[in-house]
Length: 151
Image 1 (cartoon, rainbow, N blue to C red):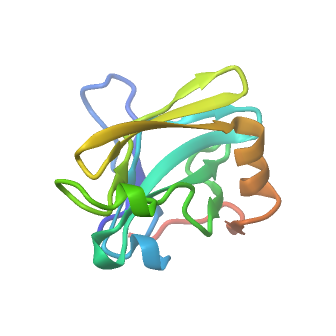
Image 2 (cartoon, rainbow, N blue to C red):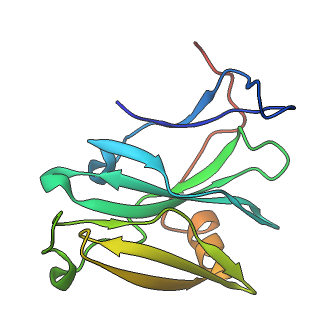
């Protein structure tokens, strides 16, 4: 199965061994799990958009928050998708898909361009403060304190 992992490099040629940050545990990410663009630095930590594939090959977007000083430490992960295909977005060349390769921070807004069923595109806009509240107060599975990774 796929995971979200992190790796570090001092030279961009040689990379340290990657460490798993997230394994698929929610129904909407059990078939596939991955990153959806580079992390966004916030005061609360690194905001990372993710994608998951669940039953009927439905692609969804979600988010997790990593510790700002120790990005190998997951603070929380949303328990529900951030963005799922609506009934109007379900039909297309590849049905049931919303997918993003990144986002753009504009002030307190996070602009998330996303593909819709490989047929059209959309842009979701979320307030970063709202996302951070979702990740720190409610709607997220809080993670344990820093973990020791087993190989």
